[in-house]
Amino acid sequence: MNNVIETILARRSTRGFSETPLTQAETDLLTQVALASPTARNTQSWHFSFVTNQALLNRFNLDMNAYMAAKFPAGQRGRFEENGYHVFYHAPLVVVISTPSDDSANKFAQIDCGIAVENLAIAAQSLGLGSVIVGLPRDLFNAPQSEGYRRDFGLPEGHEFAIAICIGHNTVTKEAHPIADGKIDFIS
Image (tube, rainbow, N blue to C red; front, side, top):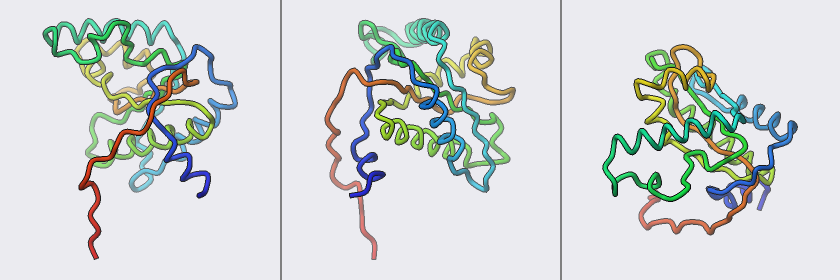
């Protein structure tokens, strides 16, 4: 089996990271991988914000927890009710991918962002790093009070959160989830 396929099959979502920052070489490779992601008609409608500012990530997490507590009653907040839950899992690097709010120019922009986040996940695995793709921050980024966060996270004017990925050195591992039956059909 070739290395790319081994990397894809070995990758798992990691929800525990050490405080060890990524090296500049690792970060540089990840930026190259992000920018190499294919896009429909080469529109390159994504934008990548590489965030290592732990104070910003922690502040966002506190506001995200407060937002979820105000939006949902106790017992309906999912992971936000777990003791010590952090929306970014204390990862040393979070890559926030955004795209123009008006997708009329590119109806595939959200798909392009999904392709880019998978590129980053596979690249992180190949570098011996862990990752977890997170979509929950969308709720706070889309809330009325989020303008400051869009600015603080470097989202360009007119962009909205699409998806994010937390990357760092694993402190936990897990087995692959079982795949449910009926997920593939062969049509010939």
